[in-house]
Image (cartoon, rainbow over all chains, first blue to last red; front, side, top):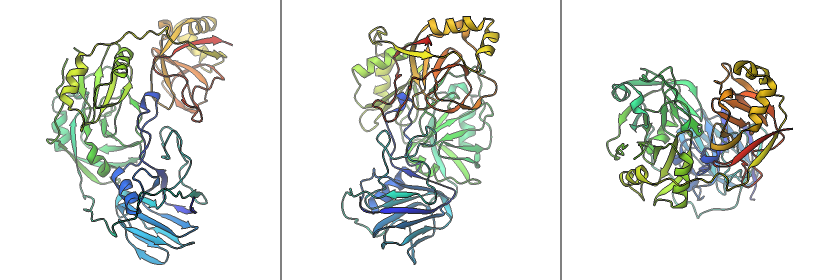
Length: 295
Length: 200
């Protein structure tokens, strides 16, 4: 252990996340982990950590931390004002904090979730092999709260190699690519064309489990109930209201509503940055082969 | 031939009359590129690495692979002692046209098999419930069901692994811990496990 971090303020909701607990779905444990996985990986790389280290996922900003010893940190994800000690700083690059200094995040101005990595990683106790907080399954450390102290680890991957990672800005009106889902045939024939031509609005009903969207309803053509079946992140689950819910990192392992379409994995990081009120569109993915349905 | 349905870029959903038999077959002889199997009521989710295997060839394989007989008698049954004191016991008796004593007798005399897990970590869906006790879920779910509650809904019975919201009918409680993250493995009840409830 090489010091500790004191949480002074958390903003609306902040958790410890890593890349989660893959491979345990058969016993009812979802993968969980960072909602925007590429931002977590990048934050780790910027401070010379293995990509799998635990970092902080901060919803809408508002985080304040104090380090007990000199530390190297990086902030990625949503666009946010950053202050390191008394110095104005920026995201997407390594930042030096001296012993006793604070890292302060303002309110995110574009995107929803910021990631804060520290060299050595946040070394909280792992549960079932991961340090991620699974809000659905109730596993891992509790959400961050003021007064909490987080230990910093000492395992690193190498020296930080860049001062700034050049990144495109998050899109104002994202287009998420989709492929047909397993239960598309439960829906009316126009469902897929409705989905890819309509504009949906992100509602305030949004968390790590999923994003409820407002827009044209997707109409189920069957009346029967679907027995529970496993889900994946990116699944668009459609409850009887017809308004799709986009599953994110902490989605239930099994779900009982039919899934007509699935957002492509590379676009899930963008989906995890959707803010309430933002507009989002869907497009049929033409790059990845669609498996032929047989039987 | 069975239906293999697309589910994103790295998974397919396989429909099967014998989900556990299909899972056992794939676990015994894992196809190249398959990384995870997730059984559910009538389907098996097969997650794969698209860099290793093409979905078309995996789909062909999955649609025709033979299931194996899961010898459910092979493993010893887990016995779960139950105090039949559930808050819904009387309602269940009424709804199924039985006496409380008959409900207890039917629930504790059947032999169950874990069909799949889901809903919450360690929550196992047990098949084998007597059809006389098949009831739809409560119309208003409880916001908090205590850990160790033994419950029924539809064709399933289950033990709540920890306190959580829930819409199943509570028939009793057990002191057996079916889920403990400090234990390896954390879950007592995995797909294929046989279970008996014993009135305590």
